[in-house]
Every structure is written in structure tokens, then in C-alpha cells.
Image 1: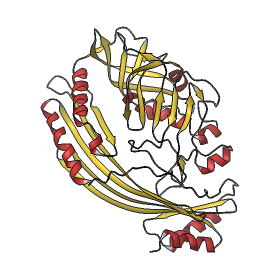
Image 2 (image 1 turned 60 degrees about the vertical axis):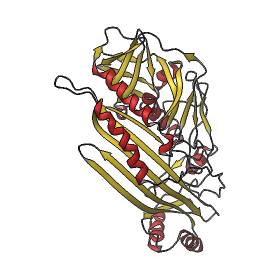
Image 3 (image 1 turned 30 degrees about the horizontal axis):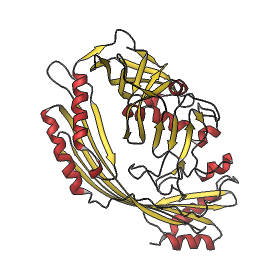
Image 4 (image 1 turned 120 degrees about the horizontal axis):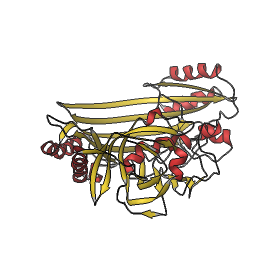
Length: 417
């Protein structure tokens, strides 16, 4: 077995520019459904890219040998020439503190134990806890040599209400971060119990509300995937994005922030070893920035946002980290607002136009200060209408997976019940 530096030097001596992306991953997961299940994973892999005269070759392996380089050279020889195929430059990122140094196994077990108390209050379908530590590094012939360790944890619950007469939709509620110490387990349990209680007795809407409120969880399931596709530089370049640069879409500000140390998606450098930084994608409604990797920044002739994402088995694509949403307008939750908590079917959206139609299995209306569950709701519209329909933020900011946002009050979407 070779090492990254020896293989890079061999490629250089053969006349190629070379990059090696390597990953060492440790993961422990524990689940309780009908019975306990656990897994302990250790994975190591290397992705090798080589460049010469506008051509690029790629190969990967779990063992770093000369054979991997030879396979990458074979791919390069049959690849198409493109002047934008150029190896990324050396970069010196400011490293974040992304590893909490916790043991993976025992904290996962200790996190699952208090979740078992939920079985006394709701019908628990599944309990989940997992912890991951991954070492990521990139070296290349341009002098790039960066690496860091990133840890992440996750706790989740799937539950519903069930008796002889009724079975409500399953609610999945989760929390994640860098450390189990950062997860409020009691708050997670309270949220599960409350939402199951709301869905226990649901009504059908007789009059359609003029306004919906997407909570942070619904934003992560609906708005996040639509936005991620639309601000991808490749999609903008190919005119596949429903959004046009320079155009105004409402009032919100959207920032991609890979430097937030509490988010498990943050990174000091991207999948090509380039230093990360915050980037405003939408500023007070104006679509003003896109996400790129090195290739698409050259293709579009724009500064690189260092948003390359990849595994060792793939070449770099473009992806967001933590999307933060801001809105200057404040709103209060109003009588008969429809609060959407969970959606299904976003994958069926027309990504190029931003059109969507999703089922809403978990939602409620506000009546006399109480949450009343509703059923048989379908929400449809498109991304432009959604963005322009935001009237303000409701409540405090929360982080759910890749979104940090307050709840958003929205008008203009179609509600079918």
C-alpha cells in the first residue's frame, strides 16, 4: 500500500497534476424497533483525480496502490477535453473545531435510554441514536495538504397514536449536532408527545386558511431541497433553475454557512480542499449568488464558493452546507393559521420549474389558542410563489438538519383538503 504523498509524487513525475481525497470513517448506530439493532462501521477510501491538457481521469479504491493511479490515467485518456478541467489550487483554510472527541458507543446507548420512556405515552415505532467520526483530507500536486476530523450525532423517534379504532400518521422527530451533550433530549420527547396528541383527533378543513405557517421542520423538508437545486451553479448555468440571477423573489435572505460549528454539515474546507466561507445566496429577496465547485466557478467565470461535496467514490458535485434563513418582518401566529409540520412527496417536484405538490400528514390549525389537528391536506405551488409569499417570520429560530430558520408565514400557496 502506498501513501497519498508518494502517489501524488509518482503522478507528478509522470507529467500529471494529481489530487487525492481520502476518508476514514467510524460510525456506531443503535435502533430499537421490534428489537434492538446495532452496527459498528469502519470505512476507509481514496478518490484519485488526475488532470492533463484539459482532460481529467478518476478512480477510487479502499486501498491506495499504484493500480488506482493507473486506472485514473486510463480514464483520462478517453475523456473529453475541456479547458475548465484544471486541478484546484493550494488553499490554507482556517480550521474549525468540529470534533468533540466523544466515544461513539456509550453516549449513543445513554441517549437511547431516556427515549424509551416515551413508550408509556405514545406508540413508539422506532428509537434511533447514532454517532460518527470522520477524518477527511485532500492532497494534491499544487502543494495542497489539508485534513480535519468531524464528528456528528443524531437522535430520532418515530411514533404515532394507535388503538383499536384509529391509527394516526407516523411522526418522525429528530435532533442532531456535533455532540450528544448539545441535544436536548427532554425537548425532543416533549415535541413527540405534543405532536402525537395533536394528530390523535384530526378534523377536515371546512374553510381554507388564507395563510400557512411552515415550521422549521417543514422548511427543511420542502423549501431546502427546492432551494438547494435552484442555487446550484451548474443548474443556473444550464438554465435548469427556476430562479434567475438578479431577480427579486420576496423579502427573505438566505445564507449558506459552512462555518457554523454546531451544524454537523459544516466544514473548514470542501471536497476539493478549498477554504470555506459564508455566502449570501438571496439578499432581501434578490437572487445574487450561486454555489460552485472549482470546475463550475471556472465555467461560469465567478468566484468559487468552495461548495464541492463528494465521497471518495465520486467526483466533486455542488451542494450546500447549513442554509440560514432571515426575514426582517415579524409576524404573530394568528387564529386559523394552518401550521405545516411535515410533508411527503417533495421528490416528485419539477425541479426545473420549482413546481411541487406535497401531502401534509402532520399539520394543525390554531383555534382559540389551541392546536387542532387537520387531515387530508395537499399543498401545492412553486418555488417562486413560495418565496414571494413569505410575509414574515414567526417565533424563535431553530435548526433542523441543514436549515436554521424561524417559522415562516406564507400566502399564495394552494391548499386542497
